Amino acid sequence: MDPAQQRFETLFGPEFGHGKPFDLAPLRATLAALGDPQAHLPPVIHVAGTNGKGSTIAFMRAIAEAAGLRVHAFTKPHLFALRERFAVANEQVSETALIAAAEHVARISTALTQFDAQVAAAFLLFDETPADLVLLETGMGGRDDSTNVIERPALSVITPIGLDHQDALGATLAEIAAHKAGIMKRNSPAIVARQDDAVRKMIEAQAEAVGAPLYRQGVEWDAYASNGHLVVQTETRALDLPLPALAGAHQIDNAGLACAALLTWRPALSEEAFAAGMTDAAWPARLQPLMRGPLSAPIRNTGGEVWVDGGHNAHGAQALAHALNAMRHRREAPTIAIVGMLARKHADSFAAALAGAVDRIIAVPLQQAHIAPNLIAAQAEALGVAASTAPSLEAAMQDAAQFPAPRVLICGSFVLAAEALTAESA
Image (cartoon, rainbow, N blue to C red; front, top):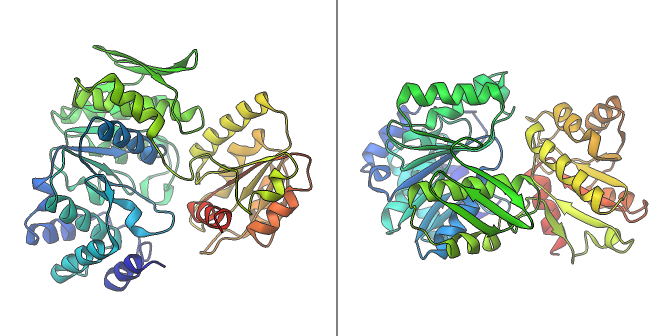
């Protein structure tokens, strides 16, 4: 555990130690004692959704920085160190500054959840340094999320919504959407990705109830790939851009959502800034190829390829399945998913979403509390997918290397993704 994460844990307890109480009163009281730093920020773009939040923010940040703007950002989760979540004026915060912010918050209250404390620390850090824009990602849900103490966002952005965190947000898409749509505010435009009908109707009803102007993909704006370009069209402007550097068809929608949001916030941004954002955006462990390190070497030596993605829910697995099927059209290959999942996730729906796109699932343990690999394998086999277990990621890679020139996807958790990226860079 890195020093900043250790300090937060010492002061506020484990990040997932006592769940989310859905009570913003302690955080609001703490922020008030700190001078309400969240009320003194540059324009805030607040982002909720199930998947694509981090990628959408990565595109917005790259575009804004290419336009010469100074950007603060708060995202989650991190891969290697807690400070990855905090960008202050285009730079990752220093460990020293982050620990100081945590201790500043703790002098007011240690009764916050750790995520509440992270949000308060982010607002303190952002308030101390001038910037032009804040990109703010929700933790879970939206209406009751710690980040929803922002009263007047410049924009609300809602990425695709699917099933996740059902124990806290509700069993149905409509219930989950009701939570996530809770970030919308009166007179603050809401830029919305393409959604399932139940989600769309809930968002539309909530937008009408609070008086938020609504900009929906496929209605007020759209984005699509055409002849090797990304085309983004709003009611007032059209952009013809390079395809996103991030892999996968789902990144077309994420990049388009980022463009639509920034066009709504600042219509005069240059097309050159948008184009640079498409090629400069970086967001690790989002369908990232491994091409040079020791972890992928056993696969690459057979002529195969290795990808890593932090996708960990059914909605994310659907996007991965779509990407794998597209890869299969380009090169037929045995497709193997190496899957490890945290204990609080749903392995059955994840495996079901992947089932049509993979030939085998190899289940592995994680370095945190996880779903037993034999349970993941049994669920995959029940779906008609060949499955096995391995005692480690490295052992699973050796197993996968027995297939001719395979395509291997390491997925199911950001914990496993971080382990893969660490082993690849060893």
